[in-house]
Amino acid sequence: MALRPILHFPDPRLRKKALEIKEVDDNIRQLADDMLETMYEAPGIGLAATQINVQKRLVVIDVSEDKSSPLIFINPEIVEQHGEREHEEGCLSVPESYEMVTRADTVCVRALDREGKQFDLEAEELLATCIQHEIDHLDGKLFVDYLSNLKRQRIKKRLEKQLKQKN
Ligand code: NI
Image 1 (cartoon, rainbow, N blue to C red):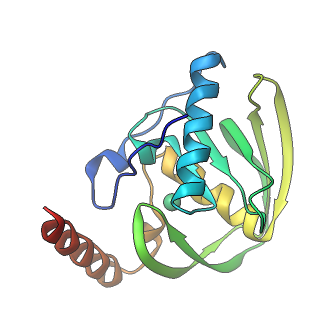
Image 2: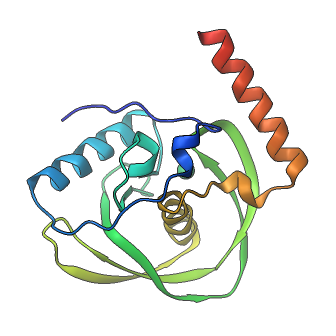
């Protein structure tokens, strides 16, 4: 297993659209394991392959308190959604920013598991928010896109400044 560096907004590579995974093989399982390790280490509750500069439709999530429920979604798709709910979101690619975002309240997601088998999962609350947030990443979309232009520019400036200080 290996930790992978996480891209930070406004890195343009976060805007790339991830491609469908044609075959779930050992390389994909290794990638999923690396992503889980990277997510836990960060620490975070969700990570999309796009965030580690891999353009494949793969998402890992664990919203449990004790990091005991890793979920892997390959080629995830929202097949049903209901209601609306506002929830505070953050993102490993947008450090130290937490903002309210409105999304569907409950979703049904269809995906392949680590064996390549299709499953459907009904999700609500934090998990529903997280699934929608991570699938957005695969389409090059970030939670800051839901904020006002002013707020997004403020976050962008702060992160660019931090990046300059590091280099
Ligand atoms: Ni994120």
